[in-house]
Length: 119
Image 1 (cartoon, rainbow, N blue to C red):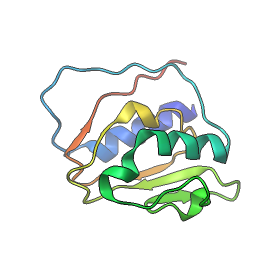
Image 2 (spheres, rainbow, N blue to C red):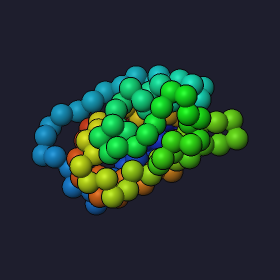
Image 3 (tube, helix red, strand yellow):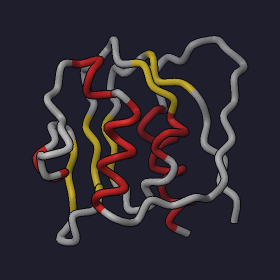
Image 4 (tube, rainbow, N blue to C red):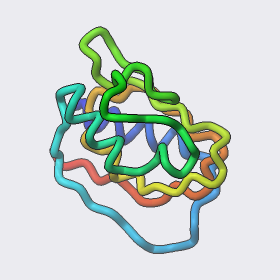
């Protein structure tokens, strides 16, 4: 399934990334975010851009967001947060991005959490 692929992709991307030694687990139902506007709202609400000084805004197309790649339909297919060592976010916030195919979180040492996929 798409969610399974996303979870597998996230797991691969984070292999080798040091994680906080917390036992916190985040569980998310298989909710999906399937419109570009909904995906933009999700990313803006996560606050990732504010932590690293990226100028993501409501009036800017999702495909112009730094670190975000979109497909022909305008849906998020890639995230590149590489080298953002101070970036803190919970992986579960990305679970609804079922169109996500490729991630690069190299050196995102403060990314935490798990994504559980329910099929």
